Image 1 (cartoon, rainbow, N blue to C red):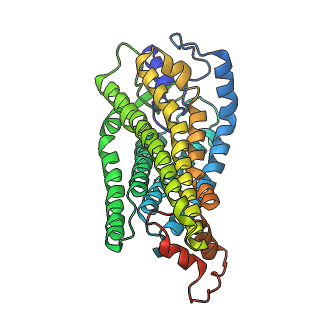
Image 2 (cartoon, rainbow, N blue to C red):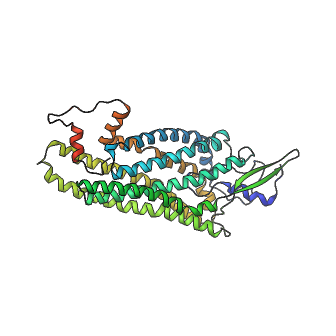
Image 3 (cartoon, rainbow, N blue to C red):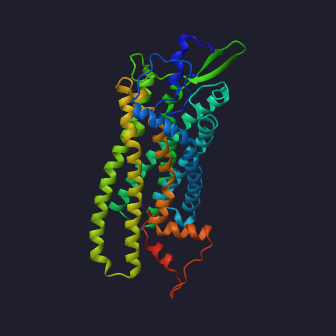
Length: 394
């Protein structure tokens, strides 16, 4: 196989860049080509990356398939009429975004990890069709992930505002529900627009391969050359915008409003403890459910911070420090992928374990569990609870 020297540098950085789930697509050079300018990766990190990459495709498929099913459960439960609340509308938008991410990741993992488990580029692996799909996958998952993290920001803000200023007025509850729908649509639209530099940065480049018998063409993603002296201005704008808009800023906002939410929750609990003894047992149930819902949303917030903040820091270091992208970020790519995918898939477990209303609705819908027995006054326990429940309960 004969390759022109000026094309050597194309192969190694054909990995799709710094983005969320696409940072470790293995489409490197053939084994007989020596990369003279390849940065040296820490041997331990490189060995671990190579070892895990053999399992990543199958592990990610298991997580994606289960995550898609669980998020479908989330959507079908949260969209029930009696579940319409501002928080639940945001959680529904979050579930749809996560489903889209994992649906795109399934064919990506099958082709680039399961069917072609090595890091060698071939005309079959890097065909124009599959690399076009890869380009689509990069842009789509960048947008959906930006949607998810900003919906999480919205979740923390709305929950905080509700705990600080609760209301039982029907007109205000209806207005808040409508506003939450518009907020979800706004986040979706803004995420598509703000990622325009990403669409312009990532592009395919054809490479001709010749041997004694045939000529063939494979396609690679053009190098972003992060941490190099000749990094393009659009690439730098894209990297910094992604790091700030989709990673660091939302993590900061989530942290701030999460802490305020915790403080406000403690304030409200102390106020209600002095009143709760004067009311019936159903009010005590309401207070406990209210606290569990807030704790559940805080768990969702913490998962996003743990997943996103380290990656945001690594993206900034990739743009600032020479060879950091090649020697540190890329070897950790598969690990960041699987952590992000698990984060997309676990919300159903949180909802079921920490929200009685969600759990009961799910059981009635999918497991044929009968409704509670009617009380003496004609209302069942859940109906009594819902009548007092705040409009942000899950």
